Image (cartoon, rainbow, N blue to C red):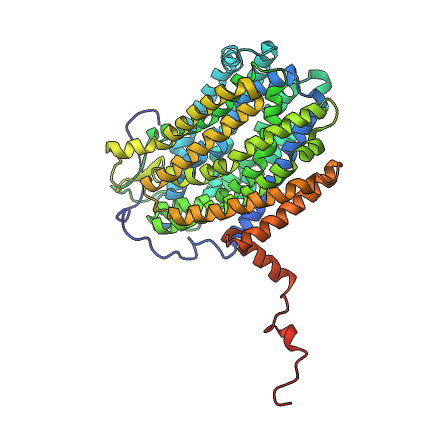
Length: 578
């Protein structure tokens, strides 16, 4: 993994790479209702993790408010905030889910040979642990320079350095958790990976509740480190169970001239994309450090609330990503395209419903969640305004999350030895297309931020974020077609246009409804109900399949509506011939 030369793992003989995949049998096809069950489990546990994360943010706001102390902690929070997408949900998942998916395809094709899954683990996990330990130590040692780079205008840099050294511990357990979660998801085991943020936030809350009076804001940093250790520990036993060889699988077998080839350099474009994407946060912290104290905290609270809607949409492709990766590993581009198109529509529907809700109810939501203790009405107004601006970029963030998974699956960190080596320059350049698209979006973010921040403050930073991420999403949609997945763009964009129209109408109706009452709870409930009903009616009327299907299913559950040909309508009629 540390050299440019591919590492070779012995595996059984492989079919030709372009050969049509065999029809899925009981061992390879997911059970009926598998997706619904997996999504349900993932949604429930992820919602629990998000709720605990929200409770964590509420506790931080109540205990410390929005001041130079929380600003210092949030600069230190940049380390786990960067490590989490790189090592848990994004880069590690993009690399290892396709790798384990291909190993599982090979295991199914040759059940009597050496287990390629265990070979993959032996070849990758030791190097990963070494790299993660080095990164964690480097972040701790370089904390003063890191703080000076991220927030040069910070009022209390010493506290930020202390907190950064504590949170640097998270790099190692985050990476281990991401690796184990990718392996489990590729095996279609979603329960334990979905619970990692429950364990993480419970660790943070436990330390905050017991130690905040003693250690102040440092207790939050210690809680982050403790929670990361719980996160990794939760996955160890399920991972070891998944690695157990099945019945009749010998540990050794006849070696073949064919092999599963590791491509270490394939991780560079993935890491480049993820770090460039995370650089939006760095830009906000950098520009926000020169604004009045508390601005970074307002941006943080607004981002956490706004991204709840985006996270709900991403849950869909979290469950379906292993299916897309397996289809691509087997060479079935049509199945992968159909699944990606469906994911794009479903994620857009969920995110746009959440966006309409936030646009209509942002002030009451922030007041309900945060306005207590040191978090006052002025903080509520500032945070709500930022949420509304952030929300313009939520759809783009969700679509990027859906599109980037199949993009990187087309060149995973492993490949069949019989497949052609991706050595031509054009194909290698396409590996870097997502990072380039993200970099261009970052330029837009910086330009808008620099132009708008002097006049609009935090709202200018949020506008730059929304403009940059939307630019990247548009470029990546085109890049997915260039990569070889034949998306039907007219169909995809037409569906999104219908959903956008429904969301705009729902916002227009929900906004006055939320303003009818002053109490935050009742305002949020009334505005949210209005938005949901309006989105359902408008989406169904406009022909949005992602809305029409669930609405019809809900109506069937509630019972058939009597009509001219329904059994209920027929009951009062006299029989024929009377």
